[in-house]
Length: 350
Image (cartoon, rainbow, N blue to C red; front, side, top):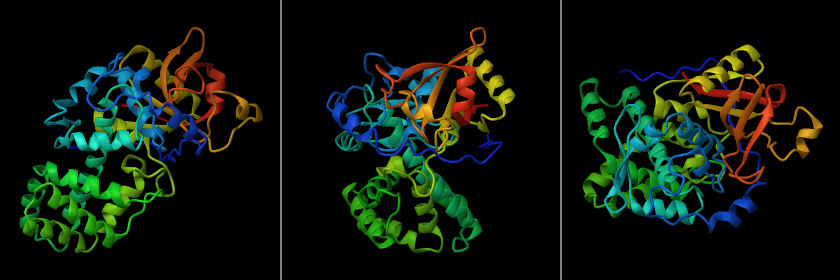
């Protein structure tokens, strides 16, 4: 099946409301489980998802929404075990490999505070997938690789799980907090990681030199800048991550829209109520009303999981992926009219 991403509009990214939540997240990090337990007491559920100190609200809110809409798909996306390494399966494309050292790194750097390792496993797999897509697109568009050799190069890439682990580790070691990285520094870091993973020196040199070809590093750097949060940057360059891409990775297709189109928004809320639909809503950069700035549920430029809708009472239930604000776990309910006025954009499964 050919992969398609359906989006009705180009949405702004979500920056997770600045640095206000960092102190609270750091204070709660010690309570997070250490690597070793794939699922916590609440299993694959929205309540188990808790964002870390990075601005990854778009990823965590999307995973929490998917955990409500299709928990069996997320559970089925993870195979393997901690000692041998987990594998993450997406709607299509190769599986990604997540090793124990990378989970330990994510925990040590507070990438995620969720119960168990399952969200962090998905996060690392998703990061590697973004690199893989960038490399595959570069191969297809390359004028240096002969047309007859491109299918072989793409097939080799599909079978190179450890290569993506090396890329992920190298990116994390050099990316700055804006999602940017230096080319020469990255190539050196990649060579080091390839050697550390046991890839022969000659092959490692070839893979590092691959990035010297026209356009390859630029495409990779663009993919990293657009998804900087999952690589350890606080935020992406220019605009934050886009939830529709996360939903699409696991569900196959997704759409996006603006809440200002009330009839379309309500239609999706009714779909949410009646079936397995995941919805993520994003707030405005600035509060549309002064009293929102004092509300415990309001964070600007932030992504929230939309978990339920009651057409009879005209209320919408949401959750902050921080797992707090409001307490005790970030869950709250708004009137439909308040929701429609407080949120700017939304993404949803098609």
